[in-house]
Image (cartoon, rainbow, N blue to C red):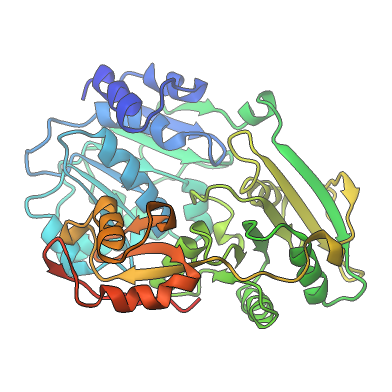
Length: 444
C-alpha cells in the first residue's frame, strides 16, 4: 500500500481526520526499517506502527504471509485486528488467539493470508502443526513487547522469529524503555522514537484523586460504601493485586447486590470476553480486576478507578489511572487505605473522601441485561442484522437496543432488563436472515 492510500483509509474508515505527532513521525519513515516505538497506552500506537508496516508488505493475493503482528493478549490481538483489517484494503487479514476454534483458523489460512495478528502461543502452535509458513514474511511487529516479556512469552517469540529468515521491516513497541534488545532479533541500526514523554507535554488528564480511609484492615465494607456513594450505572474499575482477592471481592460485592463483573488471567477466554462485553454495555458496570485490565484494552467511558490494593509500582499506578479520564473526559481515582497499607511514594492525592449514604444510596440493579445469540461474523451476521431482528421480530424500539458486540460465532446485545425474559420467548419462532438462531439471557 502507498502512504497516500493508508492515510486515506485511516481518514475514511477509522474517522481519524488528522494524525497525531507520533503517527506523523512514523509516516515519515521509509521502509524497510527497524524501529523501536516507545509510547504510552491509548496514544494511537496501532495506527502509528501500521503506517510503516503496511507500506512494507508485498502486493496482496500472493498466497503467502507478508506481515505478522504479535501481541501478548487475546483482547489486544482483536483490537489490532479490527484496526488493521479496516485500513489494509485488499489484504486478507486474520487473527489467531487462544480460545478461538482451531478449525476456523486452519480454514482461514487456505489460501494463506497476507497479514496475521496473533498471540505468541497460538502462532507457534500453527507453525508446529505446519498449517502455515513464515519463510517469506518480510515485516514483523512485536506490540507491547515489554508486557510480553513480563508474561513470559520470550521463549515463544524466539522460536517464532527462528522461522522468519527474511524480515526486512522490524517494529517493536513498548510502554517502557527496554534495557537490552532481544538477542534473537536483528536490531542493528534500529531507530528509536520515544513518545513516552508526550503525555507530559499534553494537557493533563482531568483526574480527581481522593484517598478513602478504611477503619479496619478488611476494606470490603469501605468499598461497598464507596460504590454506593457513586451515581447509579457509573462504570467503575476496582483493581486488586491477586486473582484470589479478585474472586473474594467480586463474590462479596455480588452478595451485597452490586452489579459487578470479574476479570483476571485465571478465567477462561469466554469468561473474560463476557466480562468485558457486560462491563462495556452496562450490564455489570462494576469490574473487579487484576492489573491484566490496566492496559491494552479499549474500554470506553470509565468514570472511576478504585485502587483496592496499592499498585505494585509507578507504572501500574499510571496504567490503572489511565483507564479513566480518556480523550478529554473527567475521571475519578480512589485509593482505599487502611492501617495495614504502606502508601508508596509515587502515589499522590488531591483530598480525602468519606463515602456517605446520602451521596448515592444503596446499590442499584443495572437497567440492562445481556442476551447471547449463537451466530456471528462467520454466519454473516452484522450489528444491523441483530438490531433489525430485535426491532422487527422482538418488538423493541430502536432506543431499547443497547450495545451490540459481534464475535466470530456469536453476538451479544444489551436490552432493557425488564423486557429480557419475555423478549427471549418472543424470538423463539423467528429466524435472523433466514437462519434459525438461539437467543438466551446471560446470568449476570
